[in-house]
Image (cartoon, rainbow, N blue to C red; front, side):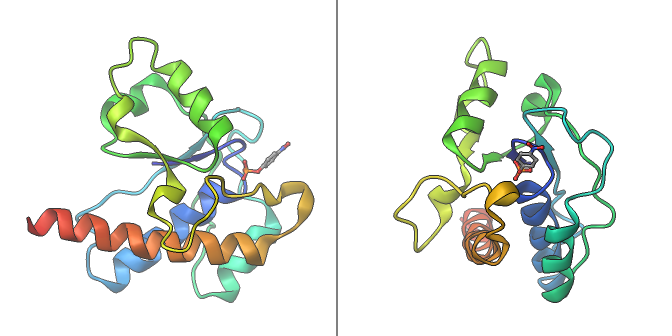
Length: 153
Ligand code: 4NP
């Protein structure tokens, strides 16, 4: 599960892109992808139209994704919870009151092969959608390599 603040820009893009590359690797029936926000500001809404356009430009769709708020149940059921920034990390760790799931809650950019920063910048006000696409796509590519390597061990 990919998590950001609104489940409106960053995590839906990671959700759609990761599904897209899973399909290209014939792994879409092996790994389930979800996304959510730490806020409920965009519950039930489609992702931001600007990020939907970026996805379409790169050959995949976000039209099936609807805004959701992360719950404690998600911490129990998901194998990996990947958060877009340190503020999301704090908020998700706060849901995990008894510190049961900390092992599977990680900053998404830990997997970024080019990263010098910990956070995926929030494009909602800044409009840096192409930069966010570049970060999210290369990090998802590296994440998939990591998961398939783990699986082969
Ligand atoms: P996200 O971006 O966390 O990447 O979905 C945002 C989307 C909406 C808002 C803030 C951030 N908002 O203030 O509504």
